[in-house]
Length: 265
Picture 1 (cartoon, rainbow, N blue to C red):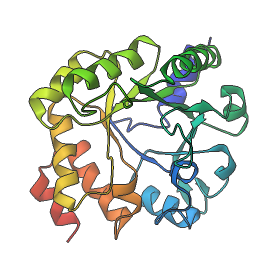
Picture 2: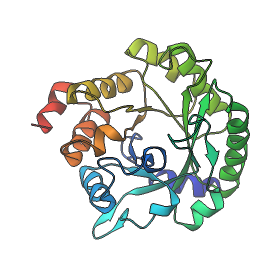
Picture 3: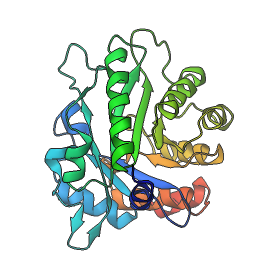
């Protein structure tokens, strides 16, 4: 077990001055195919790196598409689990990459996606346990994307199920936990207070306005969140670089939504 190794790698995926992070997941290609924003991988990685993002998330086959080189330097998180929208069971994630393979590919951290409340939960938790153990032994940070999503879940944004999902990620040994925003500062405080590791918010589906996404970023930070892991609302934005800069103004500089919106004008 390498504690110092994990600390060094954590510093590659967070802002060392604020202790917060802006991560841009780009693992959607397996789930949804080559969607808008993820066709020119080198271009989009360069754009979010220029904006000041701390790390990207991608699958192993895209490593080398530009996360470092030609002036680009951004943390690399390799995603270990997958499913497709073509499946009869799209909520059932399966391991497709090992921690060891991710390290050999140059990962600064690894991530896993777990959906709770569906028929595949048992297998996903078993995989989570394996990945958590291997991550600890190798000294590499683990980001757990935790969602209450499946047959038993009536509202995946309900604070009771979201804080339960965050706590599962915490107790299973994740170093960072990503969950959906619960809609208000007060409710999201419950999520953060119930989890002893940093909590990040997901961006979810593409939103209608810049204000909408920046409002949830601001709310999560006010509630004690440690940053964001936002994909489509960044890489499908008309200016991914400036959207990252606007998010960073809130996450790292304490700006309000109106000030952040000025960056996008």
